[in-house]
Length: 136
Image (cartoon, rainbow, N blue to C red; front, top):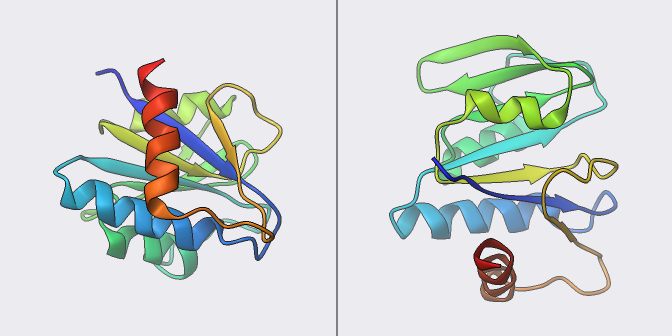
């Protein structure tokens, strides 16, 4: 499967999670399968809460909470701990058309959209950007 991947980076409070939740909802409503990856510097947990829960509630299946070298895959069937060497290794756990990533700002292995609190793009603007990225 040729996955369409995009990472969203920016400072805390810039609106990344809110935008990704809206994008997940729109893409799922359009009939696409969507997974999400959330990069965290906090200790990993297996609780469906916070951003992980928001991504899942919006329709992402599965969602990966990724720390440094390890992660937790959240699916409707439960959770599974995984390890990885490079962020791109996480993709082998995802069999979806679209993968939206929050974080991994120092990783250049997939297209990146930087979000700033000064100008928050609309879902339509971002979908147009992603369409250009994914069709080029």
